[in-house]
Length: 171
Image (cartoon, rainbow, N blue to C red; front, side):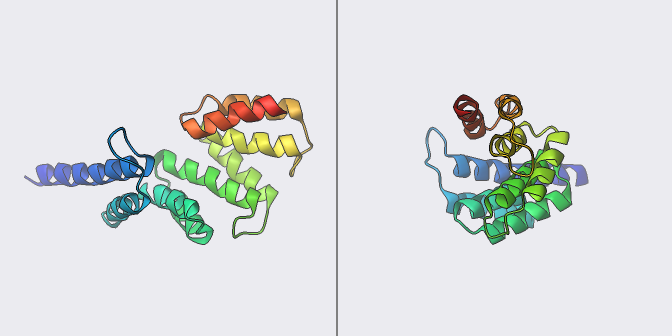
């Protein structure tokens, strides 16, 4: 009986996460709805699913609330939750590279990108590629930038794959 209750609880949390992802990305039958996504992810977080921090960070970032985004990403990293903590490292690297409500710090951006890549977050190669393309915190190196963009193009996040292909083509 306890196992059945635990399985039901996990299924409920997973359903909240999936509903949040569907609302965040939009589906064939529903448009993107950040408010609904935030509601589902907040409920999942309240039930103990730390992966929701990453998605809440993305929502905060899209809403231009970079302070909240940074806090959510840091909470996700602290939880060491699967791939989302590495995506959060990548996202924090971007915040530091762009200076979104934090002081621009290319060294920190590079550190977060390298940590994410070390944990197989392929998309973080975009960040390093960008640093090498522009010579931020590293010596400018177009060939190295293309190498990182090519690695990033093998990732799962379709937005970043497109960015990697575009960036590799314009160097």
